[in-house]
Length: 320
Image (cartoon, rainbow, N blue to C red; front, side, top):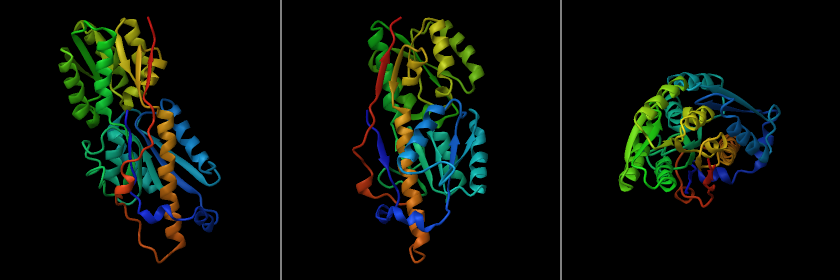
């Protein structure tokens, strides 16, 4: 599986010496973290991000502070949480997923934004293109539509005679109902299967969704890699097992008891996000040290747009 990165700092930022930070005596970087769900649900991702910061020489409470805000699955809260982070004078905002990235982009044009992970930033309206993202935003994409299609294919491989499949989506996430849904539908059609959609906006809607899935005589279920759903993989896996339903989701879904897990390594991906944060903080330090330098501008450099680094997709299956 492919993952692309697009870095939007001026090329000169990379040449700035690490020692520039030392010229800001007593400077403690403030990193805002905007989460779609809860700190408990995203403990693994946060641990990865903190590990990445430590790799780069940051010590929490000494030279960096992480100021986090959580939407608890209520995406309509995200813009207000971003505004709160901006008021707290953070140096950079880290977020994930299409809802978080859109809320950050629409709320601030001055604070740098790092997307730790997002499905398709172009289709989601977050950036103009990978080659020329523009604005104050940078980050990593893992191309969720491709993952969604693969989950449908894995269901068919596990049960070749399957004709009725379903996908579990959050309609409040634009990244789920656009290209990802289309990719799933195309995959199902090519495999001669019907694909039914089941929408879940809140965790308390999961039980009723699975009741409808059972009534519809669905043979296999694909769970979208989406913030609120990812935060509730344990509950979703439990409901799928309870109904003896063939299901495919993220790697964490399989670890929680689901049958098939296929997806990105979230720990490694969020760890890599710290590199983007470090580049931004170094650029800010250089700008402070050199008062004659230009203001920070965010512009894509073609040589940075397609990087070779990639994380491995992980596949895990548990036999029943």
